[in-house]
Image (cartoon, rainbow, N blue to C red; front, side, top):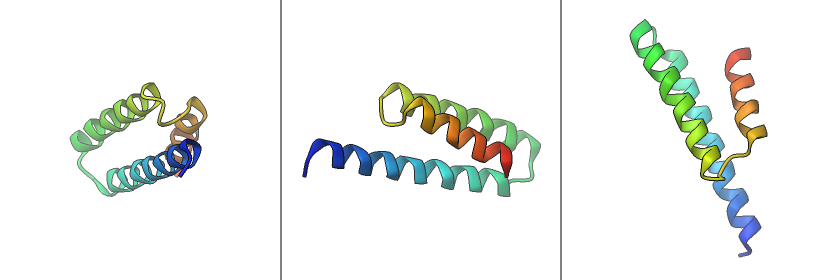
Amino acid sequence: MDTNTVAAEIRDRKMQEIRTLIERNKQSRDEVSIAYNEGLLEGRLFELKDLGVLSEEDVLLLEMEHVME
């Protein structure tokens, strides 16, 4: 398996994990939990970007999906 395929699989898995996290956050109705989860999400996105798992474009896409829903 080449490096690009592995990297793409990791990226796809992390993108799905973030989407799942976003969906769980939306189901929360507690304002304190929502604020906490927003911070958790933002931190996780930038952590994955800094590690090179997600690109800047991936982060922007996920943020836009989150705002649009």
